[in-house]
Image (cartoon, rainbow, N blue to C red; front, side, top):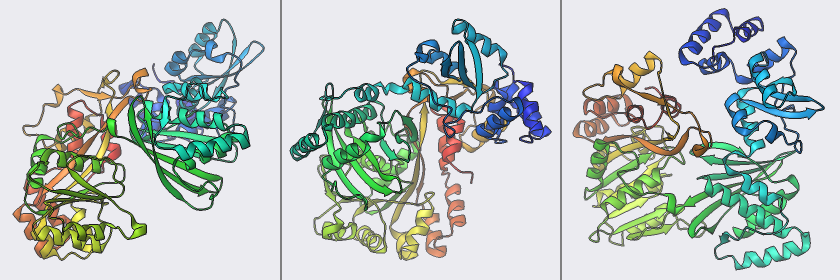
Length: 583
């Protein structure tokens, strides 16, 4: 659809855009075949909300948002039948309420008379009263109203007052929990409904491949959000009156103190869904509005420990395995929480695991139990820390040691001692890139001459979302993005830009209209070659000299790894730019 010049003029007259920005946005809209408003947001000239407010003031059309509580569908008027979900999504419109023969509709461009006439025809001649709202807020409201992504499981359960249909989520080893819940049901009269609600939330989250469930209490409502492929999406939340009961149910399952609401608490429990055993790690934190619950879902069946499928480029896999097969040395993998470091290390250990080697791990927590590895869980309350377990490991005749994380000087020194006495040690650090691990280790008290002698490999990783194979569509990116992608991918020979095909996210029913399905890792992996050992020995943590030495060895960065995934059609340019930084 060609961009509407009226909106461009409104934004200029409202001082939201300058004349130069308007012309630039019109050009981008024409080339990208998107709306003018989308081009403005893409270029960073204004936000969706700023555009909607400016249009509202200039045209005298009411502004609807979640904050002013106007962008809220009046239920019970059969609006989902009057405006079907597919039409609402395709045209980014939302029916709000029906008054006599007038239908109030939220849309991004109330001056689009063609759209208004089409809605009038679709609804059998109803008069259309436009409200202006931002695209992002309309799409969120559509999710809430039409229950996208299958949240009807929660909706149906909320409509029931018994546990009918909830038996397909079985709590493992929770006899005590059942007794307590029976008592709660007798005292509150709604225990069965609470059990059904919690089971429905868990089942829905597992069905949608959710990694974290966020349940938050606010002044006027409860918010339920699922983290899917690293992004939080809001889902239909339970009613506010049920919130305390749901939190109590989760505490009982996790063997936590249901009377304690002032201090943070952590616990775990397990469930069985469709014969799959799934562990949940629970964190409860007090906030000004009450307790917030976050449940991390650890689905063992969904984790694939195949080193050929986690995202390594061929040379990266070769370098990592070569270091992992050394008889001794230090290997460090860096990245933020939730970036898949543990999965990568498990995959590497699975690839090198043999009966001839003794593997020992100390983790906090042990997320996946693997045969052939002697795994130990940190229990700081009784003195079982990373450092104390490592000291014990050295008397257990280990060949390969995995340390969940190096957090302090004592742990780093013990790892170094193990590497210098003939053991291979793998661990993780929290740094922004791989080479910063050298600086961090020196800061933790390791002498540069000892580090240069023991360090075998440093690596960093991030997760990028994979484009949904069912709906990804080819697109033509800007020339500067193409040039950057080809140049920084460091492929030899460099591909011909004219022959490349790039893809972007679109959205369909199979990916819950996100455009992405699943994630894959991108890596930067630096084997410590002799030149890098010399730099560490002479200059310590001089990042500039380390990077120059690594570049001369032909190694590449996270962004380079990401560009290779883009060229392979696995992910999009926008996704790589969002998770990596320019060097």
